[in-house]
Length: 320
Image 1 (spheres, rainbow, N blue to C red):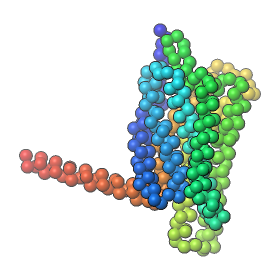
Image 2: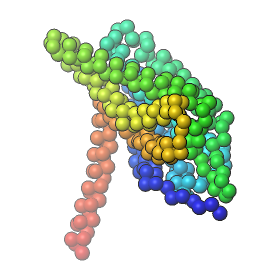
Image 3: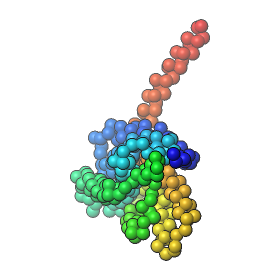
Image 4: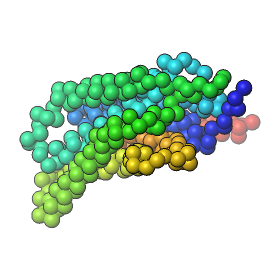
């Protein structure tokens, strides 16, 4: 039988993501739904972002089993395609909703009156539905028309990025990077810059617009900054590295070492990209005062339940 390779250390990150991501996103989902009476455009986008992260974290156990078996996929090919589809859906649904949140905050600060209709609940729900449908169709067509399970003797792998080596896919990959990463990244930077400039001008001219309005504008700036940081940390290394590799493949004759180095790079940056499911709840924390209040209330309740139990245990031990 073929020798089964040992997974690299980066795959331990999936265990951590599963342990922290599932409870973190369930908590975020609970807090948002707990406060559903105060739903606005930003909160609706955050609900969808959290749903995408939760869906992804629930698919992680299958990947953990795969890596623990030394890259051996023991399930059917259909399950490989479903897990792969969920992974890339989470990536690009997350990018899409981060883009939506940034544009929403930009409109709220820069064009508050003109954008009332665009930021209405009905319009935002339609945008969210459109994002899910478009990205699902794109991802499903990509993965369900390809053979993702590769077999070598008795050993079979799942989603090991072999399609990146096929020349007919390379121009499409470049277009995908442009539409799904570079354009959203530019829009997010533009939104943050405009909001920051607006707040700077207001401070310079001493135009407070009221304490509540000033606090809301400042919170919008923090939200877009949080989105920008998560975007940079999680998605930038993968997409820049992928772009460089594809350009090199199109302009130079690829050698074996280049392919091997790129495989190692991909595995590391994909693991980094997965971290977004644990970082996205922090965007919720910055976006809503209610979120922060409910979160702290839950923590206090947990501490209050724990402390008396500890005190009772101490009293009993002293009596003994």
